[in-house]
Image 1 (cartoon, helix red, strand yellow):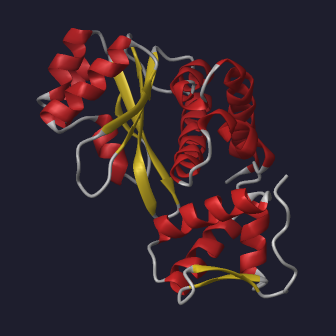
Image 2 (cartoon, rainbow, N blue to C red):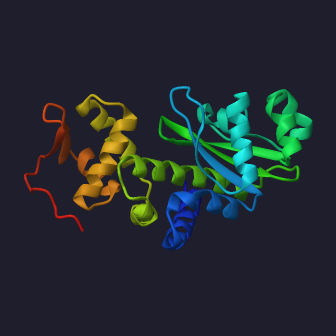
Image 3 (cartoon, one colour):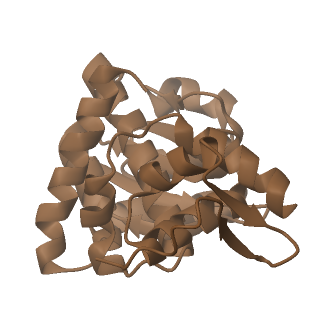
Length: 252
């Protein structure tokens, strides 16, 4: 992740942490996405193994309706974003949306959406879902809006993995903010744990996040220990092994 996009991710995390004082971060993800991009609305959905989209959050009734429409007709920007390598979208649904999504576009326009954009929510090779951003007037995204969209998708991916690892929703933003370096060691460690534990990369990422939480350290720190071969996952024991013999640190 570039310095610029990393800075935007930090801004997003700080906004989430501030809002978390008034509720769960998962309810604020889409509100922050709408605010930082300056668009009409946002929605986040999960998808796995070809199953229909599952809503995580939405910023408005129209965002809800647009996600429901994708589930109904089986096409749209969020659906395409799940398997995309980059952003997909239409700057003017009334003109170019028909050939992209012949069932979705006319209904979305009738509902009030004029431009829609989908960002893949992923960590490395792990595809988790999609981020939908839309506006009620035609037009492309600015470079800043696009950068914030990708940063928001990255933050959403980390938040989703934190939830799957069992982290309480009301502390996710604080925990992610404390490990906001987003360094490459996480992906290298996930690959190593995947081999050590005969599990998928996705399961390895969740296992890393959960174990870091138990130890009271950041996922980034645990990842560096795994990469340095100071900590490993023992498949026979189905548990973690500290090769330094230093024991388990007390949780903060």
